Length: 293
Ligand code: R5P
Image (cartoon, rainbow, N blue to C red; front, side):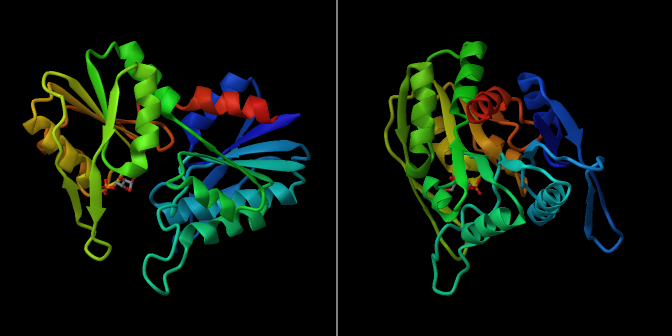
């Protein structure tokens, strides 16, 4: 028998996936002590069965990560036979190498901690670099939210779309979406200053006049990457501009920054719950879990 343990950071997605799979779910209780420490409780005496644990690790990342570690450890203590940790958004994944001497390779440290805390299998969505999965010794799977984004726009009946990746790293994801929409796809060259964080995008001429631009990225954080591209597309006559991502972190007035640059609508998936997370990855996740169970 398999049961789904739903962590405090992925309530809605957890419930949707449980319904898709027709499984029993357990809602994990959580609170924060006055000194800021996290507390979790699995409301069961024993869970001597196979468990799927869902917990995303968006901001506040450290709190959500500690909750994840506490839940994994508690589930093992309570007798879980095998735990599949589903972490729709894995925090710290952008620090996947030593960019400057002496830096921590943060995603490597997280892989070790998740494994040590008790995960037997790891599933995530659009990890920043697929290669980071090599830091896990347990079976690890990187799912793509592109089918969910593609079907959303198909259902919306978007007219004359043109999919754009704001940098080369997002090109494969954008390409997946463009194949579903059967339209053109391209990417821009982007450079980020490692110290100041300032993003520069090289302009290039596109046949975008009168078309609906769909800018697709894995993460929207400050919105600067998208804003740069939106300005270029707007100046070249794009009729409507969507900005869509898998992981809407949205910090520092990101939505406003993108809108000021010409973005008409901002969308994300429920890998991170937010007011713009209108695209659900629940079907993609449920299908993957069915294959894995
Ligand atoms: C980095 O290369 C990622 O794919 C995103 O493009 C980046 O994290 C977006 O960050 P921001 O919204 O702050 O420009």
